[in-house]
Amino acid sequence: SFTNSSTTGKTLTVAVEPTFPPFEFQSATGELQGFDVDLIQAIAQSANFKVKYQNMPFAGMIPALQTQTVDAAVAAMTITAERVKIISFSRPYFKSGLAIATRTDNQNITNFDNLKNKIIGVQIGTTGALKAKNIPGAEIRTFNDSPLTLQALINGNVDAVLNDQVVILYGIKSGDLKRLKIVSSLLTEEFYGIPTPKGSPNLDLINQGLATVLKNGTYAKIYQKWFGT
Ligand code: ARG
Image 1: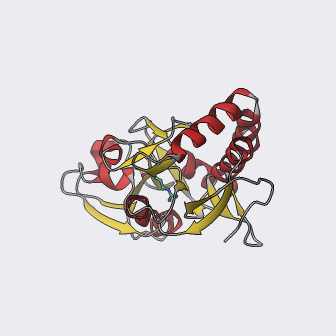
Image 2 (image 1 turned 45 degrees about the vertical axis):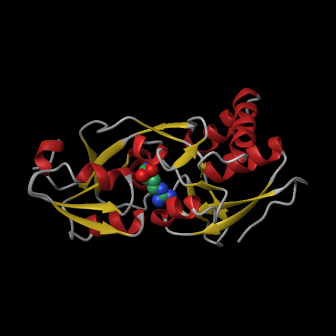
């Protein structure tokens, strides 16, 4: 686990699953990095708290928040009506949405309707997994993380993957995902938020920090670092 030492306030335990580039992932030397990581560090700096990361699978985060095992998560987590019933979220910090990934040589999947009766790969516990349930006749294969899901597609074990579009795009651009493409337009409009246990007293602190970094240009710098051209 990693801790920032630059602040003096209280320590928040923050869940992370570092396999979701460019939001949270590990460098070749094992260092935690990504858009969400830079953002929480900036928020912590301005709201004066320390961050102690705790690795866990994405599907374990909501249960860990519910039991207050962790204080927050940095996970590119979409704010959904279902989740809001059981946990709280900061204000939205990133606009996102689901896309369909296929292999570049696939000619017969060009839209959501074409997914009928196909084999669909999704990461367990995600909005992509939820969306896949709406596909008539589809066989859904679930994987523990996003790279395993996309690797199954590259290997030909699934016909298509539903995942956050930016994550697929980043993988294609970085050369990590060979012979994959995105088909059709965004399937959903989603917004990421920083989740906390329901009604957590830390929510105000996080929202204040987020408001500051949005206002003082730090958010824009972090955005440029990860998504600038
Ligand atoms: N945005 C999607 C969701 O909230 C996927 C997030 C996956 N995050 C991760 N760290 N693996 O369901």
